[in-house]
Amino acid sequence: MSTVDRVERVVIDDLLRGALAPGTRIRQDVLADQLGVSKIPVREALQRLSALGLLHFETNRGAAVPTLSVAEAIENSVLRKSIEVEILRQAIPNMSIVDLAEAELALGNAELGVTESNWAFHRALYQASGWTRGLAMVEILHAAMAPYVLLYIESLGGAEPSESEHRELLAACREGDVERAVRLLTSHLAEASSAVIDFLSMNEARGDDV
Image (cartoon, rainbow, N blue to C red; front, top):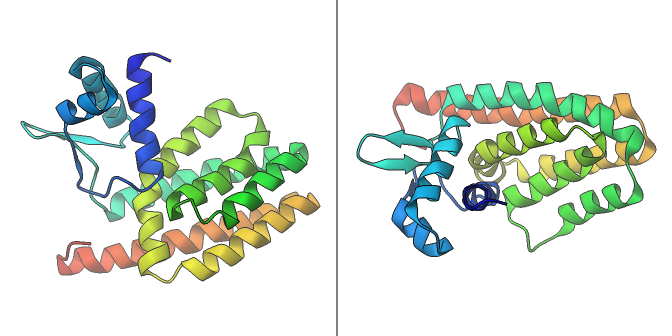
C-alpha cells in the first residue's frame, strides 16, 4: 500500500466510523503529523476523496466533509439501492457460515459504533458476491452515507426498525431465500432514506441547519 493509499484508507475508515461529522475540516498538516508523512501524499489522498464526493474543497480553506443535503441523500440512496440489491442477489448462493456469522457478530458487537456496525453487517452479507469493484463502490457509498445513517438511527427513531429489519434480512440469507432477502433489503433501504430525505427537505424549506 502506497503512502497515498494509506492516508486515503485512514480517512475512509474515519468516515465509516462516523468519526468525521458533516462540516468537519481536514487539516493537511495535522493529518500529516498524525500519520508521520509529508503533506504531499495527504494532499493527493484528499483530492482523490474529493473526486469521489467524500470531501469537498473550498478556496483557501482546504478540504471538509460535506454538509447534509437532500440532493446528496437522494443520489446516495438511489445508487445504494441499485448496486446493493444486485450484489446481495449474487452473494446469497455463495454465502458461507463464516459470512453469516460475521453479519451476526456485527449486529451484536457493542464495541462498534452505529455506522461502523451498519457497514460491517452489510459488508458481511455482500462479500460472497465476488464483485470486487461493486464492493469498493458500496464502501464509498457507505462512507458518504454514514452521517445520514447516524441521523436516522439516533434522531429519527430508526434504531429499533433498523435492528429488526437487519435480523429479518439475515434470516432470509440463512435460508437462502434470494427473492425475500432482496425484497427486505429494498424495503430497508427505502424506508430509511425516505425518513432522512423528508426530514432534510423540511429543514431546507425552513432554512434550518441539521
